[in-house]
Image (cartoon, rainbow, N blue to C red):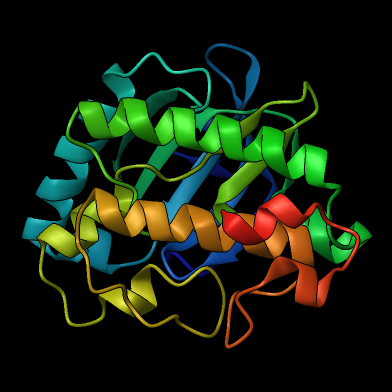
Length: 229
């Protein structure tokens, strides 16, 4: 079995039903847990996560810490392991769409919704930081907008493991899409503060931050106070 190919059943238990998305770290799949008869999300990671012992150990430690957190803004980590050379993790399936999917489908969000998403993300990040976990790879692709109204953070632990392993290809492994972003200077919670601000800017304006730092310059109908944020 290879990371780039689908497989009908993973680890003799998880039937892969549909691919939900793909990024530098690997693919996300909707799957059916045959043992517990429930839908789950399976993250099938790229080969370095199985082949690099430092990365594999760091990922195991980070996911154990993330799995111990009881935070409404994080899908619960349920399982994980190595199956025929492929590293995978299993987490709670929360129906919804990523912020990227929402932006592609409907364009920029209302300021009130952006404020709710921001409150959810910052609350989750604050709790994670308190436990020594940083995300380090925030992007609209890693924010899930649940049908129940929650904004959830995906992939907590993966970025920290990649950075801790000191891999030269960290930017590629953590890229939310085909074009890897420039890695932030910070390697701790400060990167998450900048990342969250960038995600919310894009949610509000439909564009990632660039030379234009004023949301109102791109979207005049937003409240003036947002230019002070």
